[in-house]
Image (tube, rainbow, N blue to C red; front, side, top):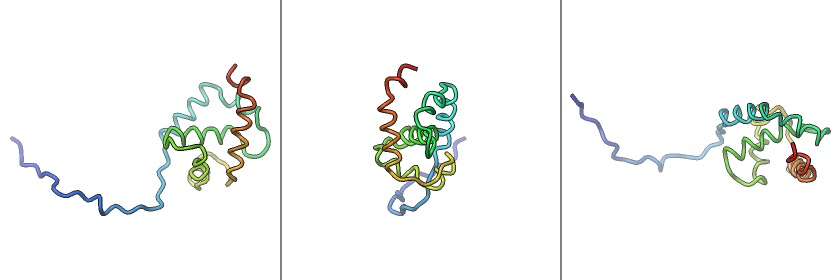
Length: 116
């Protein structure tokens, strides 16, 4: 009835080598896009920053980053500036200071944002 099964006898983790491949969290990105739409966050955040890179795309990328890699927001700049991520969220390369300005903008408008 049962055929003999082979048991793994060797671990091959010593053979793994780091590389530059990136995995983009498509499922997480899709979830963030849907929730952004359902909760109408585009209207809430969109009016707080009108120049430069759109705040909504940056926020969608930041939320995807935090849900995927729970690292510091300071480290998010490196992840978001990868060409695959920028292509997914449709924005050009930008400096780390741009994210700082976004966070400052959100902080300055937090009462209005929370009230909605």
